[in-house]
Length: 84
Image (cartoon, rainbow, N blue to C red):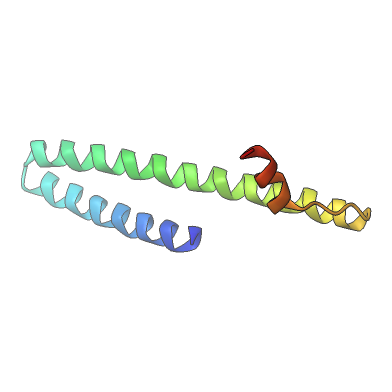
C-alpha cells in the first residue's frame, strides 16, 4: 500500500513541477506560489511515508531477531489486552 501511495505522491509532485514551470513561463506568479505550496505539502507527505517505511523495517528486523531467539509474540492477544 505504501508503494502505491508513494507512486501517487511522486506523480502528483511531477505534475506540480510541470505546473510551476508553466506558470513561470506565463508569469502567473499567483498560480506558481500555489503550486509551490502544494509541492511542499507533497514533499512532507513523501518524507512521512519514508519514515513510516523505515520504522516498519526496524520493527520487522526486531521481530525476525526475536523469532531467531525463539521468542514468539502474539500481537492479536496484545491488542485485545489493551482494549480491556
